[in-house]
Image (cartoon, rainbow, N blue to C red; front, side):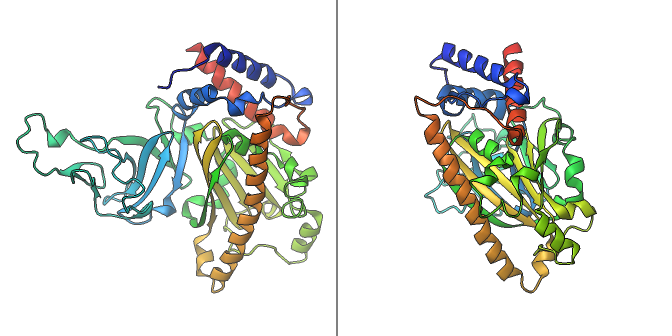
Length: 398
């Protein structure tokens, strides 16, 4: 565990966060800049948020066959998501139980995603099965300390929810389905578990993870950041946020009047096959969802965007922006051409967000910045503040 270098400063920052989060929406203000820039507060988040809650790390469609795997690093833990020969998905440590090497580091020719029959540590050629059990360790027969039946790759607690793979470092936390039960009614009609991931863009970001979460959830920035991309389609003034969703936030983004009129005239703007269980109203809006702390979804009538956030420091993170569509969409004869256009659009509006968030992080380091007022269209930020304050209160009560 990283030692806090300025404990009194951390206490003072947490008190400022609690005070800001206690305000009603009508007088709400942004959080102090140090919430997004202070290394000690980030380390506090690692210990009291990321290591105590459910974190989404993948979608089942990324590992459809036995032996399929994905590597990722999450808060300094080298992980591998793998589908075993028994068809079960597991999240294992990539750290060899012998001398602690990351078995699939960059620079050793290992693909970040692929298919394997086993995991081979390149250091001494110890071999592990897809379930993490040790199946080979050459020249260890003279060691009296070596007990091969007791050697394995550590396995992290993981669960599947709506097709998404979640892990937690907390053995006591409630199941992910219980934790996000309030979000399920909003998502069930999309049948995301049966969707296919068809795009996955990676971004190396120079900003705090909460800057991204807040930007993702509030539609107010459509007016400026997305003036040419989202605002004509999803006007900020029409958006509204659910007042209370346990362990999450839901914000509705109704389509512009001109698009609604086109739909009513039989001119649907969708390009992929839509899920069969959608309600009529689902065709007239998009929505953004936050499952605290950082599970982010963006749904439309014919698609789902999922964001994978991998924080690395107070001011850096890796972001994966992904697109999921129905399986039937991939059977469309014009699917490759449609997908190419949609990926171009995905890059365009995400680049707008990345540029703005980078500039926000730069501004937060200014000595003259003081938190400004939040408007009613920033209600998701206000709700996220309350979540953050709750985590501080829980940690301080233990």
